[in-house]
Length: 205
View 1 (spheres, rainbow, N blue to C red):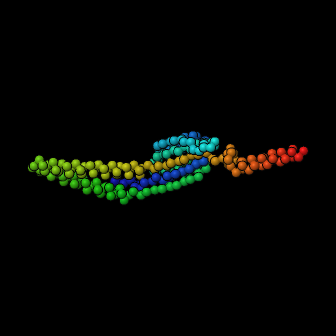
View 2: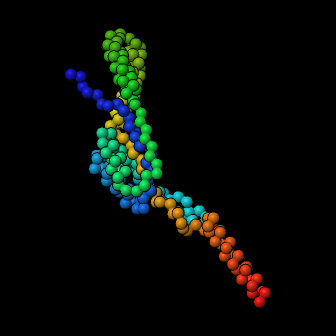
View 3: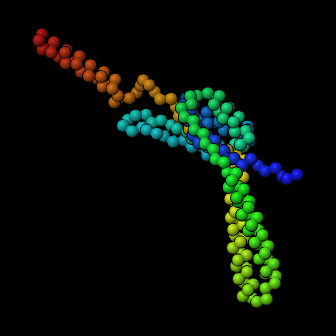
């Protein structure tokens, strides 16, 4: 019975998941805990400040990148979505690498057969120059085998784990602190108009 091959489907299934939450650090820890409970781990977690120009209050943004087993990917996404907060962006992508994987296996077999042939020729070489020439070709073949096997290991890693990137930011303030908006300008204009009317009344008196 032939060995069962892994499912060759590279699932970088959520390249972008945006959330609006009030407690960024708490949400980031909750997401990390969800990934770890499913056998995953946090690749990176970073916080940065946005805005703050012109006297405005800066806004903090936290980005968390996770790697989770592909078999439990859907469960991790479901838990993250049910953890609270408002989803403002979700993008899913996937790439089928089956064809490339099969091609790699075929090329590796071909290179190993060529390596075996060079080894036979090496044993029967009578001249030093012939042996050196075969040794050079053999070295090139082995280098190619290592390169192909490295690519195959990379694909196997990508198919066994999925990447989830979550961006957290606080909800935007609808009413508030801006001193340069339309309503602020309107209020200031009305205030100036009242002051001017008062000045004219005082002058007439």
